[in-house]
Length: 461
Image (tube, rainbow, N blue to C red; front, side):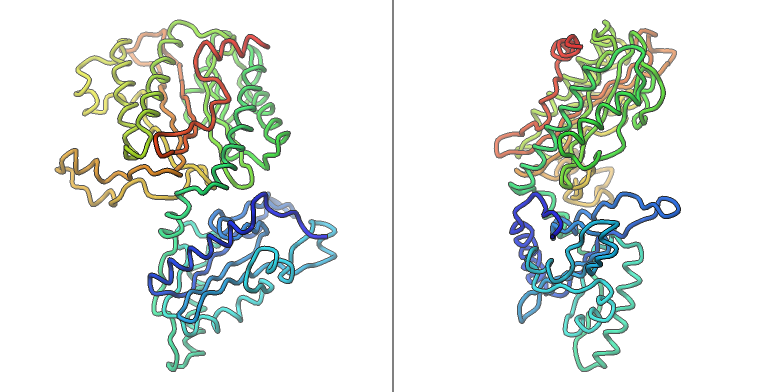
């Protein structure tokens, strides 16, 4: 018997490794070392559920802990090596089947595979002859990776004795890997569509279940149930269920607060399917009907999201959607009397920020806040005296295959200059968008977003 295979064609992972090695070769070659995570103990003898390192999985499809991928790109050719746990029949009785090196290498398409402990002796010898060593230096799955690299390099120098090349320095692999992961391939796009469909069903179930008197954690339970029923392995992040004034707390976790008649309920929940995240937020009335002030602010947020969607295409840069949303939200706040002044002046002074303090989106993929730069230049390289055109040029142009969230919001806390009818209203609307050649595909619209559609769904209770 062997463990279950990933829900992907394994040739996809080999093609990614080949692309990475070709990229390294074009930059002088060398050896790349990518670890996945180790089991972490929760308490006593109980571990946390294991979740593989995203970049390691992206290149391997291998989801066991305590594994390492080594890629060599040199003048004599390229080679991939996996180090993984040895098969242990006694432990497998308790914890499940392992691949082991002998089965893993041919199954996953590695040139060779060895037991994880062999890495310590094998790697210093393998480093000899390479002039560069690459590793993910930011957010590495192994906390002491840099220390281990330095130790292996020291051992390699002792072996080489000045007669053979040894890497003179370490280079961060993250920028290359992040660029690869930023543009999703067809297999990834399909998996993200499936993840989005599951999350949308969970949100629909929460809307059907919600009513005054229900606790936040009860809605969370409904959401998690749908995730697991439809094959998701876990939530993509800790589920946010916020009733009433809790909706003005951006990361409020589901608690014991009960929903009251007249409350809005904000749910930010997404699932992970074979590593790929979905991320949806919907806001709806606990009693099934939006009040006048709730409807007024909801329509502002929805209009802002629609404007951001229109600015999500290869013709726009990453920040264009946020800029469009800010204009709609600020104008809406003026119209409802929450702000006073000219639109451009209020935006320039960022007077909208007490009501809308976060950005309109982020990359999405194997991580909820996925990897990849938002700007073409570091933020610190932009002078405050630069023209708007110069600053705009620093934002990353959107490309087909990128996936990002579109999530404007409004959060009104009690203030002297804000009418009491708007107090404690928190609204966010979030969808996942795949950039296409001519615009974007909203992956998460299986859950309604228009007020009338939400009220119709809730009437089915």
